[in-house]
Length: 557
Image 1 (cartoon, rainbow, N blue to C red):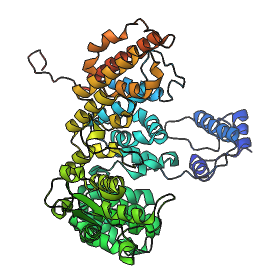
Image 2: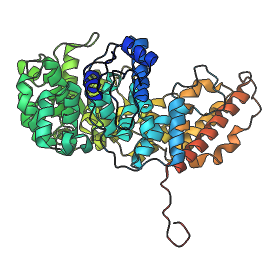
Image 3: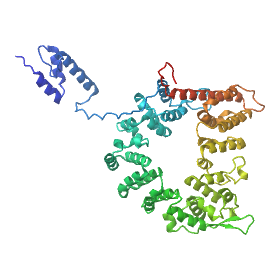
């Protein structure tokens, strides 16, 4: 007697466990007309088809050596991204840039082909400025590129949008993205207070940092209040990173919280709180530091001209240490000069004008300083100008770019001064003009880092100064490899409209007497690559332009 299993019974069996392989084989050998296979048969499906489906699934399981298990919970659907899609040409360009991100390899001779790897950051920034979203199919490659290069992350994550965070929660390889893109759109639940509170109390540390940063950009006071709810129970290393997030939107409203942080158990937290307070010239800490610094610097009017006299502190008392003065100097530094530099760095710069007879910053910087304290004092003022973003003092301390040694010794021997940081305090146009004059007077040898902080594309005077300096280097007969860093910056930062004007430089020239062998040909290659890269950047810019709207009368506008 042949027994059969009803379809309902088979369905219940299959729902709890897969059919044994021998049972499937038996049903196949005998035929489904004689033996109903021990599998569920869907409405409209034949028993033979159901048997073949079950056999296919079981075959995959057996080959993968996978034990049957209940299916895991499906992830929530990816959030919507309403931003417009990239134009087709720009989408293809992004695919090429991501495929080439491994670079063209090392070596001093690069040939004439543009380096696509170095153009990716600029392309991402331009696409983000247009408000596009990244294509869904390219999100994994975009996240991989951002994981490999931290300089890509802000623009890449902004272009990827909320779906980058969704993917990062599914793949630990991209967990860096959980720090977020820093925009209001990153707030959970569209800014829902309960969702934010839950994330702050229960989320991963990276998610909490991202939340605090996004809140500080949207509403600094709301972010500070959120931080205050759990501050006493946070770990020291977490308090330090959370405190650093307060740089975003720093204002006088943060002063009470930062003053309390001066008494924190962690030395690093105390130092960061003191640094933030000193960036607020109206804070109580800034006033205390000004009082201390002014006591150690006076103007001797009996001399002609007047001379600044420095009397460095003889001790670093508890009050100074609480306000962020580090008592132990680095190796090779004297204690008294170390303490003085920290006091001057944290004192409001505008207070020196009143302290020194109403003089302007330029006049103060020009004053002679007794007993070889000039370098130490000016270096501290430079750090203060950067911290307080004081343009008047930055101009005075930079001096005239054409003759720095005659206008305040911008970077004397033994100085720790950073001209590049001072330049960042100036407005973009003024910064570019200063660097252009510096290059015209001193060449490119000391200008590489300065060029890196100038706005892109470079203003016309700066671009012309760089190209002229490169042309002079070619005429001197050296190899272009000595200027490869500047040439690489020029490829990324010169205005693409300059390509036609620079065509003349691509021709090989006669090598001057005493020139390095073959240098003329190498320079020709370098300038061909420069012009080719500028034209490629122009093409990329055109590809990102939104399509012209149809006017409805057969034309476009």
